[in-house]
Image (cartoon, rainbow, N blue to C red; front, side, top):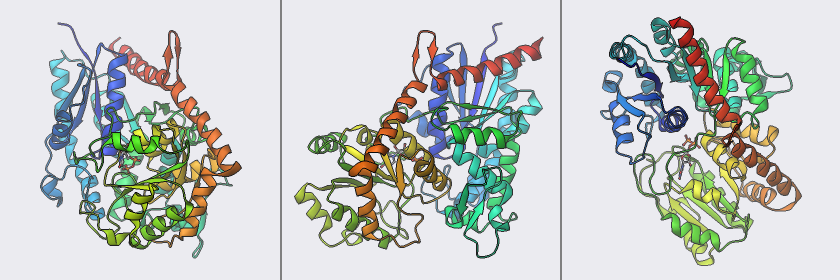
Amino acid sequence: MARQQHIVMFPFMAQGHIIPFLALAKLIAQRHPALTVTLLNTPLNIQSLQSSNVLHPSNVHLKSLPYRGTDFGLPPGAENTDSLPLPSIIRIFDSSESLQPHLVRFLSELTRENNGQPPLLIIADVFLGWTVDVARSLGVPHASFTTCGAFGTAAYMSLWLHLPHVAAPPGSREFNVPGFPEAFKLQTDQMSSYMRAADGSDPWSRFFRRQITRSLRSDAIVCNTVEEVETEGLRLLRRNAGGGLRVFPVGPLLPLESNSSHDRSGRKSGVEAGCIVKWLDSHESGSVVFVSFGSQNTVSASQMMSLAAGLEASGHPFVWVVRPPLGFDLGSEFRPEWLPQGFEERMRASGKGILIRRWAPQLEILSHGSTGAFLSHCGWNSVLESLSRGVCIIGWPLASEQFYNSKMVEEELRVGTELARGTVEEVRSEAVEAAVRLVIEGDEGREMKERASKYRRMIREAMREEGEVKGSSIRSVDELIEMAMSSSRSTSV
Ligand code: UDP
């Protein structure tokens, strides 16, 4: 009986992980139609992918594994990090290891049904480092997939594994990061609150240190980035990950479907994409600021006031995805008192600004020629989407590796400027105005724009294939599959 070659993919239970995993599954399946790619997750996540109407190639399968988050103190129905408050997020992290016996059972059955041939490769999230042990026990090659950029991943790994901030001299705000060049410094406010509080024995440290250490025992790291864009980040990741680990940059893995009309939980966008495009059409090329803090972050009430005042003072048109400020349920109705008095009416009447409730068609907005800057929290998907459209970034990182993405955007790629960090510091409206002017007006902004256009071209090239000529990310995907195939050939000899 003919044996089928399988690739098994396993993202961590968060939308920001599932989306690039699915994009990679589709890419592999299209390039290697003889393979079957199975994406695993918990029942509700798989159900939501099945009902999302995204068309997959017929060789991409979705499969759910049993999961009981309530055993870990999670509310019923919570199977991914969406809308979960911070204390519950660590529970979902901890619960992920309970999937281990189910993964073993699935892989054993798959192997039996396939006449004893195990899968060719397991590609699992760096947060699911325990999957390396499962793969080893079955003799299957394993690749750890980081959905962040290379620089962000290298910084994040080093911080968790070395906890240098704990060793930093008291009172010192600036410290070196092990494995990074001497000249590279981070400041204590470039870490999430849970990382600042980490002492190695707390739940966050225990989780990250255990999973990262195991992930680094994999055969490869797959990274949602582009070789030519993140040369320094990839150099650091390759060096710090150790010699035996190959790193495959396969990005940009952008959302498969247009994310214009619904958010990740299916909530309808606050506005139709067509209306925004029409509004953008009426503005000058490169003049509009797009403001969004991603899918799960927001700023404080006083920061929101300053942001509004600064945008207004800049005189530049803007599209702003507004969410309730910190301390309020992100899904609740947006209240006018969270903005300066009469702000929305003034902006509407003058045609200067559009406020979108909750969810905007981000890719469409970034793709429009009128968009000149993206004031962003620097989530990795947002950075990639912005660069892939040649749009400069005004950084306002709020959590996790967003701080390192923002630093890279400003200092290494030089396609933006950092305006603020986190939700605690006071942000003056004058600083908002100055950052907007810097990026949109004048010589410095023009130079940033030229560099951003260069990165846009590199990103497109990376995914291009013409005859024999393949872009770097396409080559990487093929090399990853070839690595797995040659390992399978050598074990079956
Ligand atoms: N996004 C969107 N509309 C919004 C907010 C977010 O389409 O109003 C999409 C955005 O295009 C990106 C993702 O949601 O693909 C956000 O991912 P990112 O890594 O930037 O940040 P996160 O939400 O994970 O913090």
